Image (cartoon, rainbow, N blue to C red; front, side, top):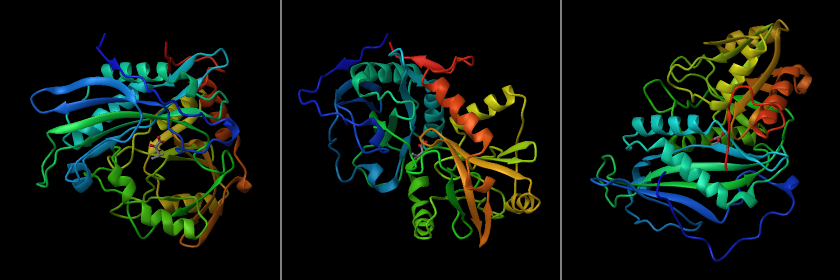
Length: 356
Ligand code: COI
């Protein structure tokens, strides 16, 4: 048992009325979880307080050198009213892996989970109930020292905010159009592509903006050295069904080890499907397409869940996948994953954690 103090907001907000109109990341709940780190003292003062602006000095290190890590997970409301988290232990474990890479002191994963549960118990009225909606959870850590030398911080804030959300892409479950990026790179091995830090996303904006200008939803990143091997989309990991093989890029140090990725692999293997984590080049993909063997493509991510890819553009070579329709496998994965997440299907893997 941890001692988490609670300060209730005296100014409750109006909740979004129509769940079917929920967008991604635009609404925030009434409270947040906060904890400080101070050198010599460690992580201290875990608390739930009213959601609101935080005060930092303009010299706070995060503004200058981007010492920041974050996570994304979701809480769902089951039909019987239970509130379920999906594999939260995996997120806090990954947060610590990100911390390690950016010289941020590790958090106590159990305390973080307890803090999150405490927060969600207070905010349970904010968890939407339709199965394609959820309460998105954003834990993050920033270096707060007022200091301009380049060194790891000695003071940090760990904050968890909550946001009721609908689908990440306006397309919902309709296949998205993806542009294969050949000019910019996202990450190289030894860098930070395998952790969740804001800088990775800042560096992707230019490419994303250019793709948007061409009417594409996102870009597909290739490896930063040979510009040949498929990596990830940036907001999702990717999978391809080629003949009877399902392929996803192996985790070799420059792509994010997605929790939805891991869950999709475990699910598909439990269905007896052949899933290989290996290198796959864009040439191999195009060749499979030309031979008529590229059956499906989809992305996986916490925010995106399962997002079918209906169209790829690689240097002008257009690959229209499955006639631009959602494939059978993507659909089954979406139904099964969201079914487990929102308690509609039995959780045979023990992935969900009830908030009570
Ligand atoms: C997520 O899927 O939770 C992510 O963090 C991706 C994106 C919204 C940044």
